[in-house]
Image 1 (cartoon, rainbow, N blue to C red):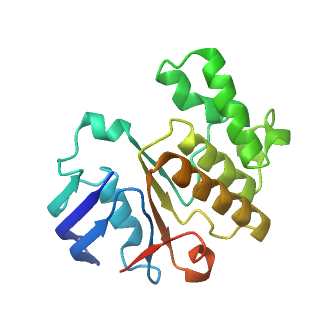
Image 2: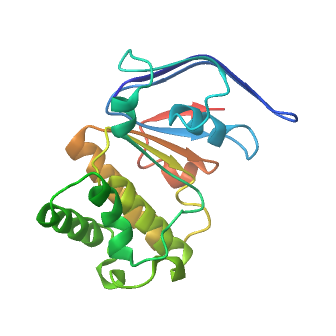
Length: 202
């Protein structure tokens, strides 16, 4: 999915985001970099369609945001919003509400558990995990529907290097196998330099 943002302005009482031009080519992995408080998350929320109180234009393959495009995107948050259920149930949930058959759901969930090395956590309550484990579960859930656009807000913040490495490998493998566009917010360039081919400095 090719994303273009033009003349974006989002104003708050104490903050203003200005983005004259930002391009995220189809199939690319792009890091949105910059210090805290500069609007990285705000930009990501606009791209995800979660913040509509802005001026300017965002297009997805040349089209305005619509229900079909929304179904093709996933966003994960800096603080994962996990259900008070098992890890398996959290990853399966998006597939279940989309009506995916049980056998296919199981295959997809088990594949993601294995890719992120969290199969041993499958039956544990997701809200009782460590920070790194929670982020891996959130990523697995985000990937479950195989989105064409994956938006990641500070996915590596305050987690251990082993978890970061596993997530980087999983994101790279998904991008290469699916051709999905990945946009990743970070304040730390060293965390993403081996993954991201493009950078947008905010």
